[in-house]
Amino acid sequence: MADTAIRHDWTRAEVVALFALPFNELLHRAHALHRRYHDPNAVQVSTLLSIKTGGCPEDCAYCPQAARYDTGVQAQKLMSVEDVLERAQAAKDAGASRFCMGAAWRGPKDRDVAKVAAIVRAVKSLGLETCATLGMLSGPQADQLKAAGLDYYNHNLDTAPEFYGEVIHTRQYQERLDTLGHVRAAGMKTCCGGIVGMGESRDQRAGLLQALATLPEHPQSVPINQLVQVEGTPLNGTAALDPFEFVRTIAVARLLMPASMVRLSAGRQQMDDAVQALCFFAGANSIFHGEKLLTTDNPDVAHDRALFARLDLHPLAVEEAGTVHADLMQAGGCGHGCGCGAAA
Ligand code: SAM
Ligand code: DTB
Ligand code: SF4
Image (cartoon, rainbow, N blue to C red; front, side):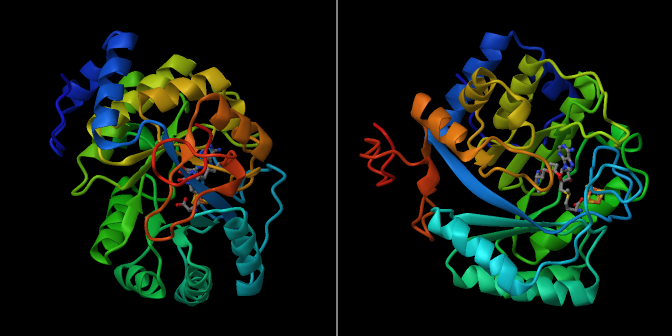
């Protein structure tokens, strides 16, 4: 029987031991725990929009938006409220419940925060849940975004503390922890995860998950990204991670943070459907839906719709918004009494 308690005191050795379990044993334990906290057939769906693209001063070795790498990403300034609203309305019309906005900043200037706050207010007025990822925030900036109606803030730890310095040199791990502290203190929910497949060891993958699971609060959303390799970035050409190791990472995240939404995040376009199915079994219960992530490709809408139907998955309705992702719905009822209309 899996231990069902929510813990914040995981040791690195315990996390490494979970990774080392026989694959079937690990998946069995993760799935059993997943079912205690979540509907195993429901997947939360978010829509992502890059509201300010490229030209970033940071040096994150994975990122196509860093100005210093020649990746072909065209820098674009912050979108207007009207343009974002149009995209948010289209997402809502397609049935979206959460709208996530990303900006390629080290951190916003105060005048940027005022502009994003206006965007958040407008998106929120459509009845959508809001999420933003803008880089580092001060306490007052977090308060301002919360006051504008921002529900979630995405800020990733990205990797284990001891591998971090090989990937990013322009900001410290502690600064990430500080931003997360400001977000929590402002009363927003945190979306915080990382990237695997950057050449880190299994021990370092365990270190990332341990760092996430020992935060003062488990992040409500935990995005697990598989590195999307982009030409021109220093990490392009990194040896690909064994897909089963990716599945293990999802399973261990589920075991460490049982109540959180674990998001099978970037990298789905490069992943077999069968591997995605294993991830959903192992405890992933959230995805980004739509043809683009921020600058790279995501599976197309028809492909995801077919995948949901083949796996009998249905999009999770958000209680407050009461909407589900229409793109992913099938005619008829799913039989779960959730009113989602997905295939039975
Ligand atoms: N600039 C802000 C920041 O870094 O916090 C917000 C946007 S940034 C693009 C958000 C997250 O996207 C990063 O923390 C990283 O985890 C993820 N990301 C960026 N490029 C990626 C890639 N090539 N593959 C996988 N994940 C990536
Ligand atoms: C997260 O953890 N993954 C998303 C979201 N948070 C903002 C971003 C993935 C970006 C992948 C590379 C790109 O499309 O530029
Ligand atoms: Fe800039 Fe964020 Fe990309 Fe780092 S991950 S280079 S901070 S946009």
